[in-house]
Amino acid sequence: MLSVRLTLLVTLALTACSVVDAHPMKWMSSSSSKSNRMPKSESMDAGILPQTKSWEKPLSAVNIAATQGSKPELVREFNEEHPAHDWGTDDATKHNLAIAFLKEKCNIPKDELVLSNSHASNSMGMYNAYFYQEIGGVKVVNGDAHVNINKVGHVRAFSDSFYKTTKNDHFIWMRLFAEGKVAPSEAFVRLLKSIKVPVNKPDRIIATLAADPNTKQTYYTLTETGNPQFKEAIVEQRFIVDAGKLVPIWEIRAKPNGRAFTAWVKVEVGKLPIGYTKDVYFIDHGKGMKKSQSAYH
Image (cartoon, rainbow, N blue to C red; front, top):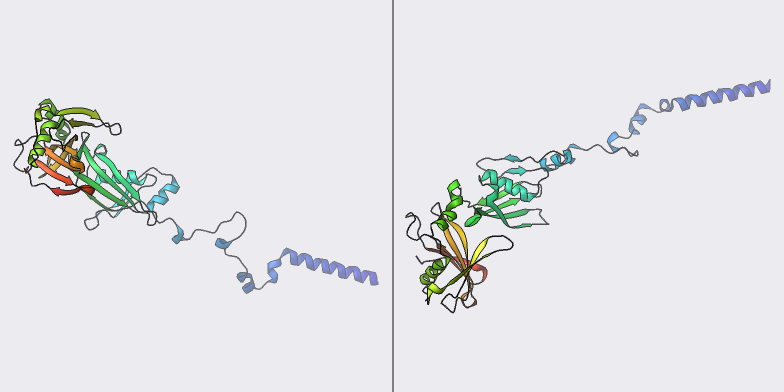
């Protein structure tokens, strides 16, 4: 009789345990059940990452597009008050972004843009690019641009002094050469006379044509200049924008008595519209090549 009772008690105990294992949560109060449930976004289970909060999503179109692997696309919002508000691109470099911006905003062909300098600020993440304009392979001495881009790829500021070209502008120097009106040695003599420097036997000046191995652009080296101060001078084709017109000029660089200067001399004296005011435009003197407008005509 005793053994029957013990068997019955053991059976009841095992049955109770199986019920508890099958429904463990039924033994917890509703309040304790809620308090012990781990939020889904904070789950620490392997392979389950917290959900991204809305404020943690990428802030710029640059980052969003890059993660999606889409093609480069400009994002911009221009208005009169903020002409360079927001520009972005997904995977283009900031250099290419600056070119794309200038092409559209300033209506300048890409082949007229030449990067002269660029630098980035590691602390602020700002990128600055400086360009000059070339027309038909000839530099425009006062055609410049500066583009400032922030760390997320938006143009924050820019400035430019570009000349808006026409098809005929690309052939100015070709026409001048064909007409025989271009003479670098004559421009050099004209420069020396304008700054009251005597020239002995100007017809003996030797002009040697050479090409820069880096830029492939041609230039003239003048020797036997007829003045001991100017043992040598470099002369190159250039443009300058004067009174809204594109003027062909010679850029002359020399170091008389070791003091460097640069001058820009018009090619066609007396054959240009009244708006052109000078024969010799500018002269740079001393260290730093500081510009000072020449008073010479």
